Image (cartoon, rainbow, N blue to C red; front, side):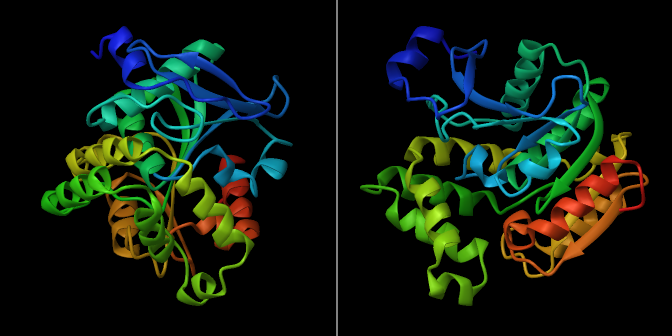
Length: 283
């Protein structure tokens, strides 16, 4: 466990975004979160991609919050949350969610995670099945490698003078080439998110992805599961989505003609699939 005082000294407190709240984890890291929707509706937790913040779900929240109490948060090292030193793990990132649920008095929740958020969703459904109702895993994988690639990326981002080069690499991998070349408002929005993150937050999260391997253990997941894949995903390939769906018993699979951020490229179709699945219908 990280010493609370050392975590605080290593990272100055970051300003919380407007309309958000925060809590402090058992290892001394302040996590920012936001709630939308009526308190008496079922809880739905949204978990982001690496390099983004809770606003990556802005296109989904207006509709989802009509039906659910929507809780979204910034990973440690991202957005308004504190930055813990060293490498993170899928278990630690997942415990942040459990502690958030405990903070809010939520026993069980639906969980929607995209990319890194999908790794967290898998871990939770495997190790804390009593806390997860329905599970949606979008543009994610049970394992990504090789480890050497992540080691080089971690070294590179920590040695870089700033986040600019890393941000452009993410942008190129997340969106269609034509969309990147156009450099419109969506690209600027996500570039701003990326540039707003400290390098240590990216490096720590890459360590979590590097070390995660749930290819066998996701077969233990009992929660009803929807897997959403991107046909042109260059980060977590569509074959990885198919592998997850074929391994989790009874999982449904939906492929959208997207690259990595399916909820941003196809917000209407993405939201419709999520709502249909959470309602218990065929997605």
